[in-house]
Amino acid sequence: MFVLELTYTAPLDRIDAVLAEHVEWLKEHYTAGTFLASGRKVPRDGGVILAAGADRATIEEITRTDPFTRAGLAEYTVTEFVATTTAPALDAFREQLPA
Image 1 (tube, rainbow, N blue to C red):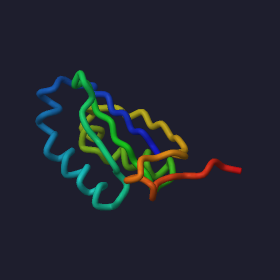
Image 2: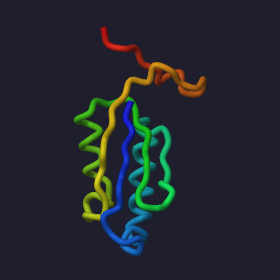
Image 3: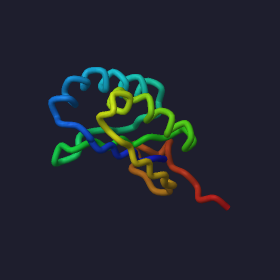
Image 4: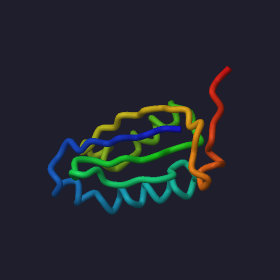
């Protein structure tokens, strides 16, 4: 599983100008089953996405297709973790530690 943290590198007016495209991009990845949760950080200087079901290289490629990234408005930090404990609603995403 992955935590994708994006940090805005541009003023909010430029972020807002691309926001609708970013939301469509999010919807595509929810439909594909890759994104599990997302939202703005508080204060609003970026966002966080919880992602699953792919390897790190695929996740990093997905972040490069974000309209915010393509427009040079945000940068991503990708943190991979093994979700060994989950809420019941996320049982399908529970992982085992590597041997």
